[in-house]
Image (cartoon, rainbow, N blue to C red; front, top):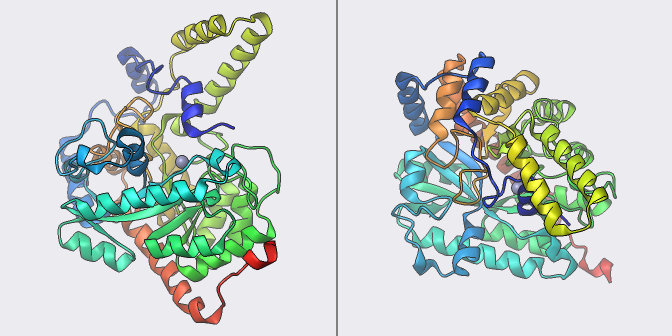
Length: 433
Ligand SMILES: [Zn+2]
């Protein structure tokens, strides 16, 4: 069972083992890649900042609720989000500096909890802490709709929404799904790292080859409720099944393009075309192993080196030391702002400008796992300055920053309004027994 944290740690990209990108390497990259700018043009940066003020900028993935539970067991008195908090992945001043107008906070519980049947219990702790910090922080307000996002933004506050990162958290219960929606969840990622009873994950072995019958029923129930079906983390077959089942636009809350980096977490081109036809939005991720065009090749080389060491050595401590030495020699897979922009270029080429958004995936205070130059929530304007440098129009920037998401959300809400009374709620619990 591999979680994201384990994956990052095993990839030498966790906080404890990261080797910082050497400046010399960055220069090599800039020198060999004509797309990489030597420095940010201050005029483009100023234009990017002013566009983000208008957009609004909507980020669909940040793990602050989990950080609160890990660092303070949910005791919010230890952190005041209205001032800078260098040990957290977000606070109000940093979000404002980054131009963020709306943030989806991730309700995340490890998928291993499905084995011990505590996923729903742990999910409630995540909802509780998220709702408490949203309501307890001056400058935040909970949003439940696209109209709410615009109203809260116009009032000078940051609109806060929640997304459930993993279908295991409903423990196969449509009733739990409905209660999550009632609490304010506006997307559910169908899986996290591992398969669940009704859907395959990207990073597990094929088991259902997509969605089961219950999985398809739950997608339809999410349409009826007015909750985005989020296809980050799911297998390509699950993506295709969900796109053929849904009546509303879907999102990828934090995913990149497979053609640029063939990582199983990223979105293949045929699925990008389905997203175009569906009216959905792919929100690009800033985490280095998903962004870097060398990311998957680096993982494969490291796995081969580890297999070789395990074949020759028995002592785990010696193996650990040897793989650490290998990582020092190899250095981390490179990723910079131009690489994220390359993913955006590709999604634009295949799906179109109307289907791109932002879902950075900040999940701890370390910048090391993130793309160089996009290490924390203040840095969004630098990505948009790079897009402007690539001749994206003001309108293009506004769409990517948030207007595509608002359009998809309004369409999702219209579908729900139509279905609310036309379809009965999904009830499965009696049949299970
Ligand atoms: Zn994730």
